[in-house]
Image 1 (tube, rainbow over the protein chains, first blue to last red):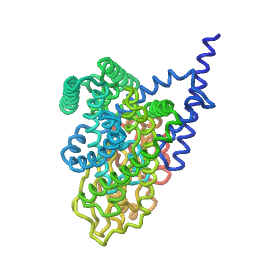
Image 2 (cartoon, rainbow over the protein chains, first blue to last red):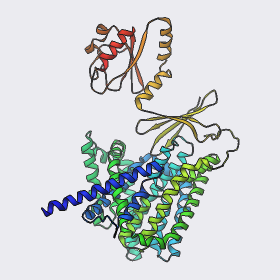
Image 3 (cartoon, chains in turn brown, orange):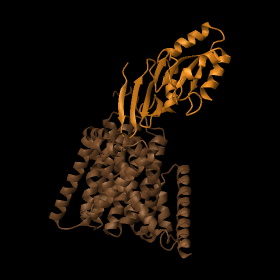
Image 4 (cartoon, helix red, strand yellow):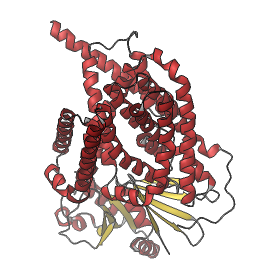
Length: 393
Length: 159
């Protein structure tokens, strides 16, 4: 009977947790906010010493969070077709590079100034750099801005960030493992080689992979993609490469019909396990560690709002967009979310600076909320377009 | 007239043009096969003043109503000339009615007196389908005849 009551406690805890997430998700939707910051906050409040300790289901939540990261990155890899990635690289690189430098530098410098060392500083640079394509795409859609002329500029920057992640994630994975400089250099060379191989497969050979996986049955397709991704992710962890990185590369390699249908089938599963991942990340952060990092988090958030707005403004201006569209493009890039947390999560697991987890949490909480609100109220700013004929394409 | 295509990574494509009257309009073709039809703002040429979301089926009907194959135009003329003529667009259901069967199977003309003039399938129109023509779910069938016969044909096609 003990075993039976043990499993019933797990079910009760999980059920209650998912219901809490559902209620928070509804609240977020009503307030016009993304759900990620609320899930993180739930994790913070449910952690050690709370009135509702998640003891029995802790193990499941931990594994669920691992699956959540894998699915988040698998879907990031699936998000864009190889053609879109190629166009993003060839036409989007000027704006992409400005975005990269203007937004990773503040985080990197802050890491150095806080005395965390180079590796943690590179992690923090990644946290402040990567915009949340999930939050941004949903907001653009909810605010009826899909057809707006500044939207391609925003999306192209997101595609470029996606490609930067393909290189950044394996490199940061190697740096976090540590070792001598020559060992690290060799591992980074291997990592970049694997990324290039995956991209070449995606661009030229993906029909082989797709033919093996393709099937009319949604059930079999789902099992095939999930099985392949988890297996490759697990094997990657064996050789000290993060499963998240491997999942991302699997996503990049899949294309065409398999990618299109896989995306539809996997989205709801990602949302469940992704939710667990944000809660788990919040659980690991002791709320009492937040106040000491609040000042740097606020300073970074203010910088991050300014640099992303400037990036979007500049890129939209280059594309011939008027002042109001430039404001919308700039504000649209502000939200950071799932990938900042994924990057911070890799570093927390590897055990870099103790303050990194709390700082990343506070940062994402602030920027995700501020960014979403800024997107919503962008058109309320008293910015006037000068009388002009519609800009030529 | 020039239509500009702009790729929207992760979403689909946008097709945009300016009408003779000076309105700027665009259609967003999304990867999930939905369509968005938008009218741009005059003051802020980068933003939309209004947007309408259409399912694949709804866009097929709009295309037909806008005279995609000039069929509609001629039918409207025809209705003016023949009093008591009824025209109806019937969308084929998922499984019931004549979905999966042919016009001949249903003995549509004999049983109801109405004629199937054309079928619109996935944006293409098939004029004057013969008795061997098989209906698929989502086909939009153009039926013509008297009011009573068109009603009977609708019932036969969909129930």
